Length: 221
Image (tube, rainbow, N blue to C red; front, side):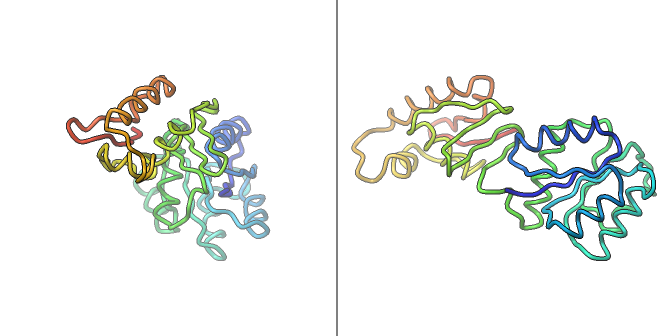
């Protein structure tokens, strides 16, 4: 489980980010200012840091400068300041991304995942797509924190599609990988399970897309 440090003097914002991050499979720590953040980074190995710019004692830029003296942990900065100079300063100091305030928690989670992916860090044994989380080990699926109870084959089907995100998989490929080479079914078996899976996914049914005449793909938008 990846470790996320949330640094902001606004407790309400910290709790908002923490809530969404934990729903997406992150282990979170909080710091109310830059000094506390540096203390935690010196004692705990984090996978990524979300860092506010406007803070008392040490602002975000000063904190980032101190962090970079000892660590190359990925950092995403939260800022209500959009001046080009500020962004250039942040990138020169070593920030990995900027998220302007006010922000969408869903977008922030997506950016955290993207930064971890670029840095070569795995987001954990879970597959995380915004509010959509698949845990292969526990065979669990949660959407927006709500657990979905999928039949075994529907879970296997969803997992294999998600592991090959955006890749169109033919019905034959899905039969071979999900049901096994010894399964003597036909393509309609896949279609039937896809239909049932979409019903279970409810409002998120569109993550399973049809490639007409070919098969299906998983795409979270």
